[in-house]
Length: 194
Image 1: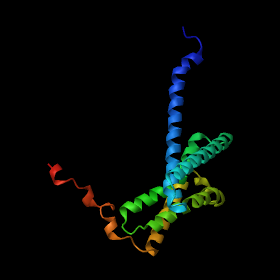
Image 2: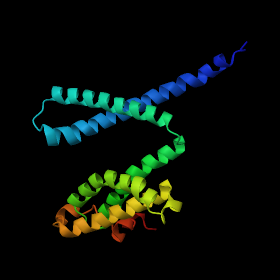
Image 3: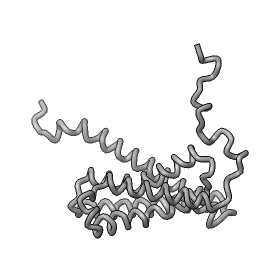
Image 4: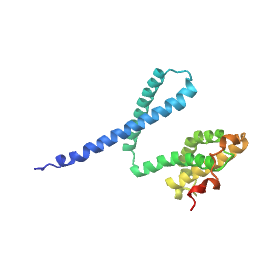
């Protein structure tokens, strides 16, 4: 007979813990792979061996986990609600990525240099918007929430993306074939039209 609540909770705790550990493992693997293959290998060490790349991947996974642990400790000591934290993180990341994706798919003139600059510019710009602009400008203070800050970051990212794309050389039209969206892409193939 089950009398203790802890005995009744065991069937729910073990699958939850297993799912969380699996998620953490997937995130660490993805982050370390992106760092190793997309940043370290092409930028810092083009001729690195497989053993070296595996070692760099393991070290980067440890550093990422340590940073995540420190951030979790910091967040538990802050007065923010978890929902607000999730929305703020989304605001920091989603707005510039959405701007780059939107213009990258819809506008032929968007350049890789502009996209790279916007993504590098996004973190300091978002910090300025969140910590300075909405805190110091009296006319913006009543609107200080994650949604309004995200819109301002998105609009600024779009503006910078357009300006930098216009002052840098345009991409080769041959490389854009099939990538830029058009109304022709939205049409059904002849065989599916009935």
